[in-house]
Length: 286
Image (cartoon, rainbow, N blue to C red; front, side, top):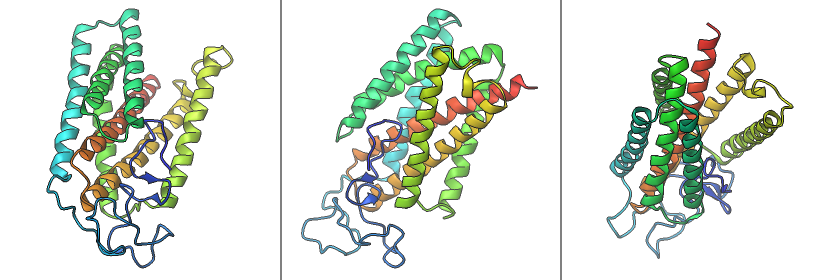
């Protein structure tokens, strides 16, 4: 089950095998009590041909396969591009209606590039870095606007994003969360329902049916919605971590590290934007 929505799209969703990392079998050790509820020895698409199905994962003959260093480097490059775009937008675009319109345009372009990448079967570094650059412009303008009203809000949002990411990683590595097919299905269902509700809310606000932002108001209800959104962001992070683990374990091609960086970047942007709104809400209520 792989969604075409770039926020929900993860290479780890297979129509045939439910959630299985890079469309692979569960890792070694899942043979007994298989949490996937399916054949514990599905075929690894990156293994050498001729390897007996059901054998432990085997690295492909080529040495050009993904490593953790590749993921870290690509993620640093992608997130660095976001940061540079944000800093330049903050420094060069003053707070104004024109800047806001430019930010909306940049966000739309970023969304289109993300959609194009999501429909591609292979990673395109140009698309991913282009997405990161335009997303950075959007974040820079929005962050400057929030900072002009709630001084220090972007900095607090960055710290909050780092805290959520670190806590999620620690919980994931400690084994408190196991990314199984059932876990992924339930989380995705909640995430899709959340986005649909937000779209309906946006339409109601646009047509004047809901006032003060509706569910996204700067009040207690808006804070609750923001917390739910951040929890969903943490859920996406666990899918990203699983994707990376499975890709390395099964010898995915090095190009897959770009997709891992792409997923991480989208998730961190999601968490940052929601954290920025949450900081503003709490600051407004002080």
